Length: 371
Image: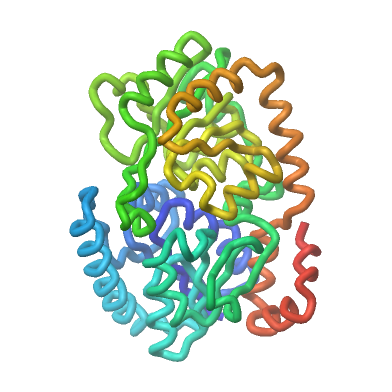
């Protein structure tokens, strides 16, 4: 089988990393195509993965015109360059997290499976641009896809478990020690730019410079602080900048005492690893996957920016909790007991498609064999 996988975010490479290798080991031919975003290309180079870059995403300003105009331009470019690429590689199936695969799949009569873990109401532009054309929509079981539910293939897990399930990821403290001394606790702060497609309404916000100053003041006498940011940091924060190879971030995250950030992706990753976290952004309470991790498994805490005093209160509460890491590891294991090995499931689903889809329709619990 010839398989094309389209990526537009660093976390999406990890989603397919083990799946791609598993399918290659079974004799299938794969090609990655990317829309460059953040550190995606840097990550692929670091991991020595062959890929084709269709377009580079230009930096978007935090205003409606910039975000919307760039998204429309990128969508047209991505469709065009993917069409050109498919002249030399004719796939049997299209997979990924990019809108273009659904358009080209519909045009050429090739099955497309678009992967998403955002509810439709959270990421309307992506969903309404891709779901009408997709053959199937693959999501966690509690993810809402609106009127497109007849196309939905649900799995009992999370995208991040495709690479952070203990069957695939083994944390190594020696990786952390390449970069800094781990004798003291350390804390991570993660900042994003809020110019993605799900931020198009410009109603969303996260950690401000004032919040960061307060966090540094609160945490500085408890351990070391490292900041990871999509945007360039202010000079006053530059000494805290995390300087590490992108492929090592999950080892650093696992051994971190606490993550505080406005990034959805890294907060979910922290939950998969059992690292305590606080998500401080205006998506608080709105995303099904994160709500489950917070309300059912107590693996993260969401705080709306309208309640900044609670950020410091919760931070103090967590860092003063005895055996905090052990508590969260117990919660993590309870979550893992409920969920599947997503990569093992996806390898089976893709290799046996479309019969695998029919099996899941008749018996959704079939997926629980992949533990």
